[in-house]
Length: 358
Ligand code: NAD
Image (cartoon, rainbow, N blue to C red; front, side, top):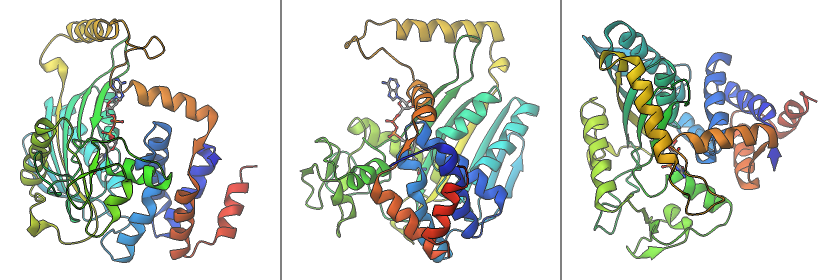
């Protein structure tokens, strides 16, 4: 079904408020989830709410939490997310790190014990918009592993995303590389399952350790595994996320002692750097623009597919989807309605909320 973004925002906000979030928190989480759709990542959109509500009902996700400061020393800030909605506590933590970097030129942020923080590029975009270059490492603990190590036949890692952001120039919007270290994010396997589509070979292995094209293997018992990005290199980067986001923040790595629930817990280490402390602003802009122009100047392999840079596919999809509406598959909508019912919001009420804008 096609739904316009304003209607989806109203429905999502109402579902989150029915789940106990204040209007302010519901808006932060809603904006994050709907923006994920608009930027072409439905895997991190409203289809996550049923998973969040399973955690809410186990009291492993707690609405209306703010971060507590664990360490605030020089450029280092470590905060605890107190099992709050990740979209809210990671936003708050990133705002605190930006404030610190505005004073000192640098900040190193450790966020631990947060529920799922969603599309990690959101935090890189925040840093870039405030004028900082930033690096973000994220790991996932709580639930079991879902990604195989290179050369292995079962899952020992998670999709551990990394983000690298460079601020905008006069000619270019921010460069934001936001990527899972697995071949695909888990949410993309969920979307393929919901759409009853096959995955390309090389994306997953079944519970028997053999290559598979069936996204359902990720929900089988025992389950299969996603493959790491770029073989040993993606495996190595996923381990880097374990050490930087898991170990350095104090949140924990995915070793078996930290697989204690079925709830996604994210830890994030972010490093914010003011480029003006390194080089002249005019030099930064010149080098960024010249390099982007050089990369994009490569003759495209397919004349209909121009060479892009990171962050651009999201911006192109955003512009198109704002106009055309957001496509949500029936299975996802049905799961969202069922999740709403668990917090007392009926389908009838949601239909009325959908009609409110007309
Ligand atoms: P992806 O493969 O769609 O994109 C990865 C990056 O490549 C993006 O920066 C994108 O702009 C860039 N890109 C895509 N096509 C390009 C092209 N043709 N030319 C140049 N650059 C291009 O993303 P993904 O790895 O599937 O991750 C999806 C989302 O899942 C991300 O937002 C990530 O943060 C999120 N995620 C979150 C968690 C979590 O635990 N919170 C875990 C895993 C992934």
